[in-house]
Amino acid sequence: MVWTKAKVSLALSLVTVFLGISVADLKVGFYSDTCPQAESIVKRVVSGASLSDPNLPAILLRLHFHDCFVEGCDGSILVDNGAISEKFAFGHEGVRGFEIIEAVKAEVEAACPGVVSCADIVALAARDAISLANGPAYEVPTGRRDGRVSNMSLAKDMPDVSDSIEILKDKFMQKGLHAKELVLLSAAHTIGTTACFFMTKRLYSFLPGGQPDPTINPVFLPELTTRCPQNGDINTRIPMDRFSERLFDKQILHNIKDGFAVLQTDAGLYEDVVTRRIVNSYVGLLNPLFGPSFETDFVKAIVKMGKINVKTGSNGEIRRVCSAFN
Ligand code: HEM
Ligand SMILES: *[C@@H]1O[C@H](CO)[C@@H](O)[C@H](O)[C@H]1NC(C)=O
Image (cartoon, rainbow, N blue to C red; front, side, top):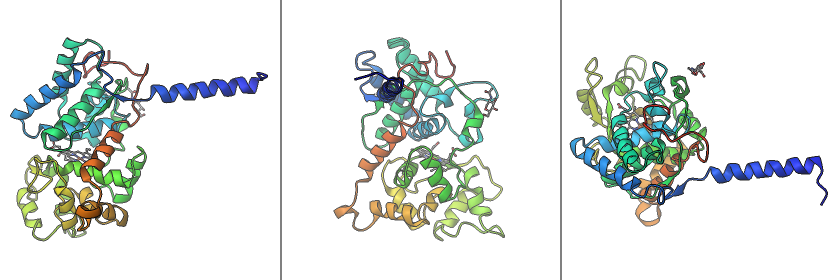
């Protein structure tokens, strides 16, 4: 074979592509040689802290989503970077759990300094959170590295509670997630709470004249308006999954179908033909016989979410503390 300039550059670009793909792979048990205790430390700290704060699983699950949707799953949301810190973005309103991740990190660093990324700790903590809430157990591919950027303007496209279903589908598609994954991942609202702050529009100014969202079941409306009264305390928190806020199950999809969704975006999943069909595939009459398993599909979706724009290989860094770049 004769090496022409064109062939050399083709070969070089194939090598680059190949390297690009191979380094981008996460794998289950990434730390099994370098820090075999890593996953058990995460689990121990998260379970311990959940005893004193039963809403912690929900907090950690949400943190994983918000981390992944900005700059990829790279722990960027954890960094204190002065006034422009990503964590101060409006789209991250109410996101918490930073100190728990930092506590896990301190223990992991004591066991194996400089090995385990904050980004992986966030992903593992979310997995343990789901399991603490009786949700499905699953293995988390690891090997993420921590990002070197924290800028609130990068979070301006976070999904918002008043986004239309079209916008939501689009924002998920930007991250490589399809309508099915939008439905499955929204069902994470099977655990946790929302501040009344996010309910104001849906309850008191949805339609001209201040009428509420008409998709709210009339039985449910007075419950919501009693718990989140107009001009009441916007910091009051209410469960997002009526009757089952601490259990990770598919009750939320039944609620969405029946008009008992709490968030406007969750309700919106039943107003669109595509996402409605997906909701029904999990909670319709035929599901027990022929339907897909919510738990199996949710696991696939969250593992996929955990791979959004990850930094691997020599990209990024392994932070010493999660709140600061090295
Ligand atoms: C589809 C777009 C989404 C929107 C618009 C949305 C919006 C919200 C809002 C407004 C809250 C209440 C926050 C607060 O008051 O502190 C919330 C809470 C929560 N979200 Fe989402 N979310 C979305 C998707 C997701 C996804 C994909 C996950 C995880 C896979 C998730 C997990 C959670 C959890 C677990 C909570 C409860 C947090 C707590 O109890 O403190 N959300 N979400
Ligand atoms: C943050 O991002 C915005 C928009 O991309 C940019 O204009 C600004 O310079 C960034 N700030 C810092 C300190 O990097």
